[in-house]
Image 1 (cartoon, rainbow, N blue to C red):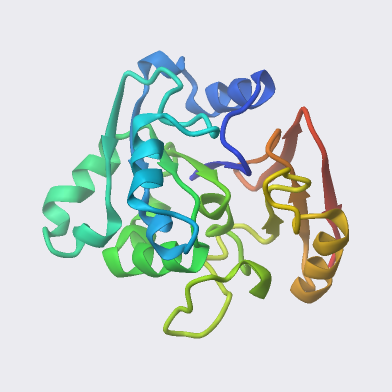
Image 2 (cartoon, rainbow, N blue to C red):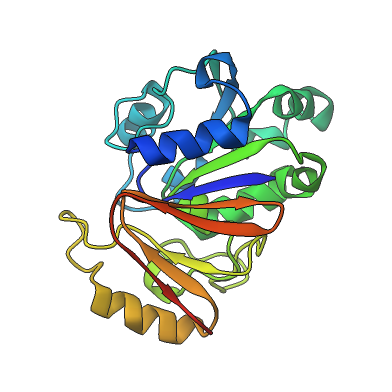
Length: 222
């Protein structure tokens, strides 16, 4: 897949331009499916916050970018309706908009639903993640970000990319997300990693990794 791994959504012109480049067409000509599932695994999220994401009423611009169409894909429901119904929906979408919350919970339901197995067959589909929706694509998220304990008891996620992400760097509502904490987190991850703020994203196309930013970020080597 083509990936735009954001911390806080498509928050500036540079990130919007990167998204349009990945889509290969204007946002107004693209169809989207939004995935709020990660919200339900995080204690700070509520039904109201899930609705705000879907309705495009959050500080993280995603569903409100001016898409041709937006649909809702709830991963916890997919295993009960059969792949013959939901797989065509995913294949027909130009982009998947994946909300934040708890990345291990999202990872669990991506696997349970069968979405993980489908991803390799979607080379032209764009995945745009917010926070946990981005972190789920990494090998590990670190214990610092685990709020929902998966059956495996591990902080490991999908490993679609070979680096980890520390999101919301320096966020005013998340006083713990400092550069000093990011350094401690990176030392525990012991692999390639990035700390990014909400004006930054990591764009991945055909194995090429590019940081797109109008804010602050830092890379950590293994």
